[in-house]
Length: 163
Image (cartoon, rainbow, N blue to C red; front, side, top):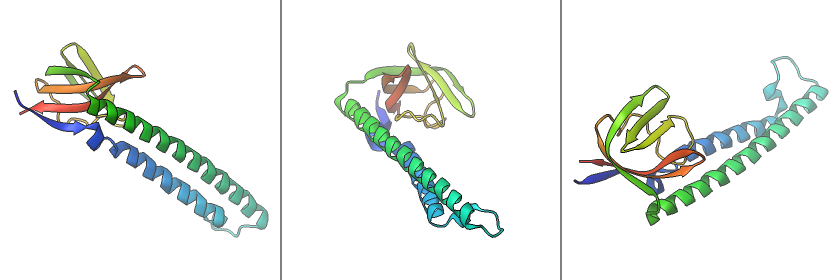
């Protein structure tokens, strides 16, 4: 039986991380501009010097906090991406193959079983692996999945579907 790889973490795995990084960059930039122009955070009335100082301090703290979170999340995402890509390329992941059983999809989660291995992930889960809701997996579909277990979750590094 021929399989087509529809997801591979080394090729497709950065999409969720890029969204998170761009959001963090925008928030940091917004707060950084607020540090330079504190009136941006004030109501339309005139802002006195004391209020400007408080608003500026708030914006500087917010920008610094946002930049720190952005840096930590970028480092975390890139290290997870590197680790998962190496595992996927090296073939050291667990592999399960067969028809999809017990398939359930809600607007937030997708759950299914292949052989005796259960997978459960949410559309907005940040796992570093596959979580594309309802696109390739359906009841009875014949799939081959390469996965690892991290923090009690099965993270899909490769997904191939039978043609």
